[in-house]
Amino acid sequence: MDYEAVIGLEVHAELQTASKMFCGCAVVDSTQAAPNTYVCPICAGLPGTLPVINAQAVNFALRVALALHCAIPPLNVFARKNYFYPDLPKGYQISQYELPLGVNGWLEIDTASGPRRVRIRRVHLEEDTGKLNHAPTPPGAPPAEDYSLVDLNRAGVPLLEIVTEPDLHTPEDVKAYAVQLRAVLRYLGVNGGDMEKGVIRFEPNISVRPTGAAELRTRTELKNLNSFRALERGTQYEITRQIAIWNSGGQVIQETRGWSEAEGRTLPQRGKEHAHDYRYFPEPDLPPLALDAALVEAARAALPELPAARRARFERDYDLSRADAELLIEDPALADYFEQAVAAQPANARRPKVIVNWLIGELFRLLNETGRPLVAAPVPPANLAALTALVSGGTINANTGKAVLETMFRTGRAPAEIVAEQGLAQVSDAGAITALVEEVLDAHPDELATYLAGKPTVEQWFFGQVMRRLRGQGNPQVIRAALAAALTRRQASA
Ligand code: ADP
Ligand code: ZN
Ligand code: MG
Image (cartoon, rainbow, N blue to C red):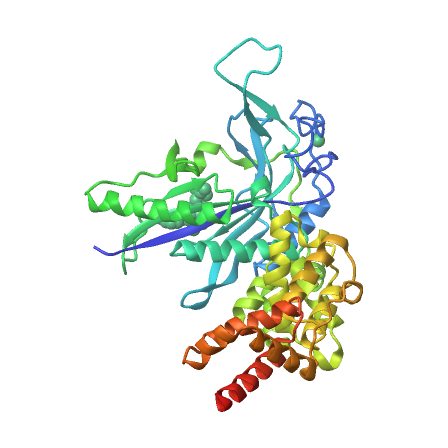
């Protein structure tokens, strides 16, 4: 039987506000800060403390909900979601349940069969939990199998949960949605998108059903996916696993499963939970949150250009392919860099595609090799533009250009300076090059004879010899033309 997958995504994104959701503690990089250094009685869950709603978090959440085309209910209510876990000091999480901040939105993604809208069921505000570090025995502690150390720096960090309808059907869809959503959050300036640090966490709910059927079968939920690759692989694994179960006459059971990157498979974590297990009730320490229409409209008016609009503009104004535009817009810093570089090209010689090629080909290679982010690249956009102008204008050839870029990257200097200082300017003088070609032909009578006897590939070898004598700085077009002409003459006189 043929099966199709049905997938809905739950996404948790920390909001990068100055302070936590209900207290004044700073929001810090929880993979860097010393454990338990940003904790107060409120986020530590001590009795007798009172939470206060963070206005910036509400504003950030509102921006996201609006960017995702959600309707904004005029009244939001926070609820207590009760459960016990050592990283949850209060014994409950403050979350939104019946009245979330945003409902019924959508996000457009690119799929193999064209652009498609993924419906968003809800966007709600809550607080993150602390972290458990499963550590070896700490110094001075009595020996035990293992220890779990609690770090509350992350406890109480504003968290946004974004839940889709089950509208996705392949691991590629899931990735496309995740990439697009992450881009939106970055453009809104509310989340840095670093999956390895766990500031954004994607959790697919996956089921399979006979192709064409309308029913939804039992789903599993996947956790611990800390890269796009893991998200795709984990989803694919789960689809395959469930199809095999149904095909062998078994039953998929509803559970939460974890992805093991090392083993390349999913493993059961815990069984089915029902909403009633959490004994939700309205948070008695917080008033309902009224979002009046004026506030919502002000937030809507303040939305920046979003990734989809920017991609469309890149395709239109810079005449880029959809794939190039898609790649550029994903990271706003990259898109900004590109636009600045194009703006730095002379107005009568704007060549956006040339910038894309140097940026994605050469500059990315150098960034990857050094592990630096683009914002820290010692090559400002104007310098990259200047380099492309030197190549397009024929001052240097493309290969020399690559070498110059490496020097630019190492030293932060401008390309023209490097070219002048190292004498890298391309040799384009047709007379000089013709003389050199003749010299090379005379110096290699055997190879010339082979060529004349009918082996045209020797021409490329001659080209290499000439280029070598020019220390790689010859103008390839001029050399090729001079060489072809000289060989024709030799042929005629042979
Ligand atoms: P819960 O809050 O209990 O985790 P929800 O019903 O809110 O469950 O759904 C969570 C996510 O799972 C949503 O993205 C939803 O679209 C998706 N989902 C629900 N049922 C299924 C199913 N049978 N197959 C695939 N995805 C599903
Ligand atoms: Zn605190
Ligand atoms: Mg769930």
